[in-house]
Image (cartoon, rainbow, N blue to C red):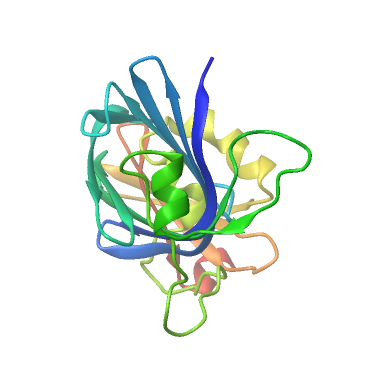
Length: 216
């Protein structure tokens, strides 16, 4: 049975292929079962990451492109997870609140500081609030920017992943073909932003915002 060492709330920033795919609230959990460490990070947009392995310096993550090795780096005030699944990914995590992982009904959340986190697990994160301007989880429809809630589909087979798109509320608006790649256009729910998916050899290669007129 896995032991939860740290359960916390914080802020995360996901860089994907050089673009900022997400910057906002997230939850973090560090679990240990035997010799296996697992870090579970859940972004506010619904994207989940599960990094696990026989030690914090031997982590891997399951992607549509297969299992990829993860480079883990602990800083004084945040943790960084880096991997490459065809695109360079970098997930930075800072904590601002930690909860007692000992599950009892009288547990109360407490502010994270060096003492509480180090007491929860050796080498755990030192939490603090991110300084600077307020962060929003609403994505700008910047042409060419990755669509954060769909990045887990990169590397997936097109036919299999379309069900995920429709279940998330995306509406198909057409497509075109250029050289060895095809491009399909999808309207994002709520925002009505236009999203383009590039498919090569039957697999999604990129999922980015495009100009609104592509979905007309």
